[in-house]
Length: 436
Image (cartoon, rainbow, N blue to C red):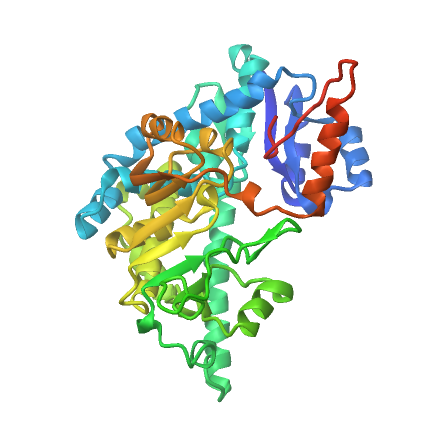
């Protein structure tokens, strides 16, 4: 039986394996190249080595969209076969008495740590070219999710765990190393910790409402995300009553200056989280069963679930700093961290989100919020059938169109008027959201 190799993400390190596979593989493909290697000279090197990029060029677009359906099916199968009877999963449900369906959606959210479903796309191309009918496919995944979802899919699809184990080893060892270095530095330094010096005048117990921006308060050149705030003194959305919580350091140019100018309370989430220390990692490792030690898949699954649980419990520790918090506003619904949503569910903190990108809602896993502001009433029955878990929907229309009132929009309107006057038939290609 002929053999082919598909490398999910080509790096200098796994390029070394190419020379080994060239001795017995009929063809070697790669799906994408690491950013630092996206150079013209590297493309020429790959061509000289006989490597080809497996893409959708010249392929019917239905295979691209089928990739999302394939990914959904893989996730549902994974939950049914690997999660529902998993001891870690069941133990966590009993510990916090949470909604099992929400926790499953949280796990799917961790699998989709980005909306780039390369594993589903790879599989759609494998199906399109019928590689598995008469060939053995050796697949080298770059993401844990790819390994967990594609392993045991087909007897002729051989999914390697080597790169995943190396990645896990690097993650754990680097965390332990930097923890040791930071402790050593803190002992040598007489300065106060960052958590104590940042926002020392903010009493976190005063806040009942919080806003979690996606990546700052500015949406490119289109508009600023300051529409949550107002100047009404007794409003929960008053500048002084609403605390802004950044998951990642905000941009210095706008977000920090804006909040500082108006003297608005804000914090960086990681400064209030409990650090993952070596003892915590060792305690989780103690829970590994004898059966899991001798199974590569079970070890990687154990790591994946442990990482998810640690994220949730870290978020629970964070929310202890805000004992009176009642509701949070979740910016960018489809990309919002589901581990924060589960922590809010456990702490009885309500969650609210606004529908952001309408095409994305049909391509990724279902979402869960207490309150969901949607573009129109017809979305509600669709979301219910799709598997969304929402307490109450609020149709409010489209959000962005009411915000982008600038010269660029006016010029677009005038351009539309110009095009509408053209009598001859014209084809206009409209691309949105990276798909289409």
